[in-house]
Image 1 (cartoon, helix red, strand yellow):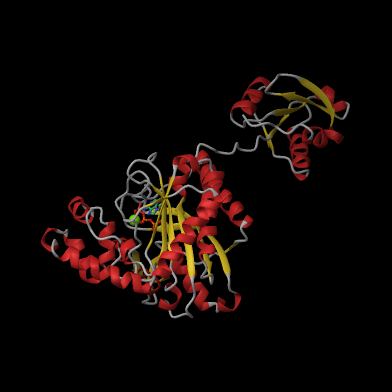
Image 2: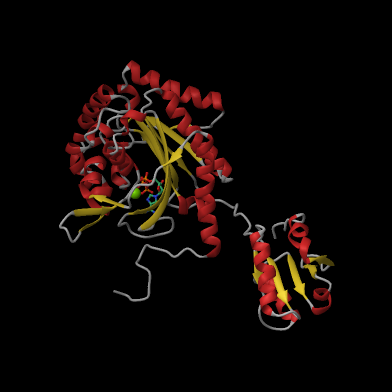
Length: 418
Ligand code: ATP
Ligand code: MG
């Protein structure tokens, strides 16, 4: 153990970074609320089974990335690597099938043992949504519209591209699987070891391989579009048609897959060139088979998750921190100053005390460190008149303001950002 260091791939969030992080999170939730989403909070760890069963035992997350441990009761637990499995588990264990349709928003830390690099951490954070119980493609359109609206509110809509694909229904996928395996079997010896392994267990995932050699082989593979049943084709046409009606730009990427069995129909990713190699900021899809796979009633589902760190790197917008009022007691004693600050806080204003140094030093500190707009100087002369001297630190102008009306006076002059 390297003492006094954070664990590799984990980060402390300080100051601006926290503000940007919260801005992403709050913006996403504020937009989701406009779409009728409520929030769900599930535990940060679950029985390992919850993830192993939902993510599939061939996925990278399950085979290589999970933080699993045996607790003191001998149970195998896992720090959640993603949000959907926990939400699905909560749906089943709370018997929520009675309250469909459900629109749920979540946020929080996720854990994956990956090689840390820019935009890839071992503890990272996501915001995400799940819509449960809606089979219609309207739910896909609305989930995509929400994603787009969130990215727009963060000011990043013009640097992301929506890539979308269909994985079809069960029959389409069975037909495609056969066609794909027939094609890939001719290249078996040239596939990467991982992909050779996937050939039997989960061939669709080979389309997603990052291995150069695999990619070259995959480039000429048959396309899902040619195996779609008419119903699956119609479903996808409704989704893309809906995006057109709403004016949401997209490109169809026939190689985009989510390789797990329970995924169907719509799969999508919002990607950017602005972050280097880790270019996917938001990803999701339809998972009509998931809840049943967890042992619940057959329930349609669609959702997405976005990486907060990647979005925070991308957004130029950071809300200015609130600019407090600086209270500077000069003549009347520090406790009198504390009382004035306390009265301002009780009136809903942010106030901080400048305790030490001469007036000049305290004013400089108020302006630089606190980023205050106004300094309330409590001098003896003004004090004897029940007033304070209020200095505008941006302009240098001063006014004498009665203490009784100080809060009201300050409230009429909201501190602009700086
Ligand atoms: P990638 O291909 O980058 O590994 P993924 O397919 O594993 O992504 P998802 O499981 O779909 O990612 O998670 C959704 C989003 O969460 C990603 O698009 C990304 O923004 C973010 N994300 C995933 N893993 C990490 C990580 N290790 N560090 C930071 N953000 C991450
Ligand atoms: Mg990954």
